[in-house]
Image (cartoon, rainbow over all chains, first blue to last red; front, top):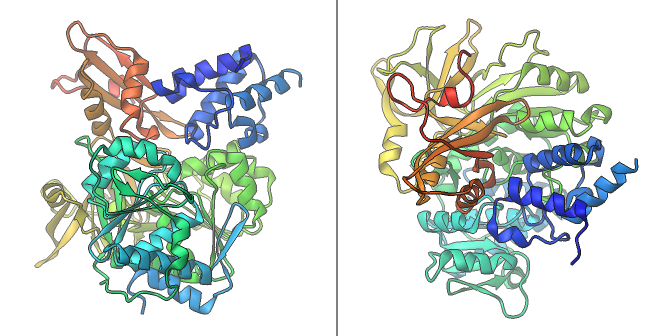
Length: 85
Length: 526
């Protein structure tokens, strides 16, 4: 599956800073992070902060929702939407 | 007179059969349906020889099936053992072996992971998959899994109780300082002492709708589950899908007009500061309870301003005693002084003792000991740990009783309320979870490259504490930080994995040669 540069940056951040697990090195952009119990509330806060700093955007609290955070692809889509906001 | 937890459910089903017992993910389960399904599961357990004196582990995401399973286990006469659904399979396997569980309820989707974690041998004789598993049901360590649909063939009538009130109702595993989680044994009588007190004190009725955010392995959930049943009220568990999203939780709790909320201060802070709670309608909120960590006065003032007619109370107690003191907040705190933990409740008595176990004069600092109805039976399979935690002490002149040593330092204020001042050991809280720093250190030391390890907590406004660790490597050893985190995540729950693991050539020490955790946490001079 092809991956955009935004997706790649988010995936790298998740694997290095949040998920730890070597077995997740092959995390795909559509893998569900929430169903697999990989992102908890602290992980979400850190991911939002990372995206804001890395991509120079702001993500309002009311957009930090399961639909926008459930996969690498969903997070990247949120980032792109905030870039053009 | 109710003697057993599942009798609360049976009584609710008798008086409010059509009322909502569980409302979750668009599903509604009535009290009659919950009672019937729990009975069916109890019969199924009994037919596999699981009953009084046994334990049934639950390792599955929060769901109506998980609630059926915990009631069914108790109706069969067994204790339920809820395991963190997000814990690694190795931790479940460890707890299942340590707790010698007779049955396991999990998901077929997790069977392969569990099979690998258990290896050839598993303690359980029976296994159910709550997510169906039609066609070629998987096995775990040789034990064939049964689909949840198989319960349909069981009888819906209650099985004969065959359980006494001092039998175990549940076993809650908490972080252990020596590196292994330990199972806190709690009986029906223990749980009912708290639940009965709470249902009466907060005047719960069948018109109430109780929020449930706490996972079932966290003892806050016992209020939600059994307080709701005691009042035949509706329980509204938060779906695992939204449990990490403050904005979604705030929307659910206000949108479903929940009347009773019970959560950690960390969670309430996130709902307020990240979840947009201040812009929502809290008119339905009647009772807001919090526990698990210190409530900042400023946060409490903000919450009380949003729901001026609601009752607010601070509940205190380690898992070993459930809630043993409470502070009924009379008005928004005028100062930023720490909120007291209040006075004894749930049929308990509290004592403040010095190191020689002598009572501390009023106003002095001492360790809190608890005796009475909610005090645990001990730690499963650990008589020496139990003997340290539960000791016979003089509770009044000439009267001795078994009391639990909390490890919490407190002081009694002139108005009679207790104030929490800190810990006498290395236990810390993060997001309301209790963590023994020693368990993290013991885990790091199991890595072949690690010679010394120290874990410490750095205070944080949003989650109370962030966990960090520093290690010293063995001679000529090399290891990446990511590998050490990975090593921890294989056996520890996610909230216990340090956010950073730094390698140093040596550890800072105090003048007495002990590792200086305060220096590491940057707390010098505070």
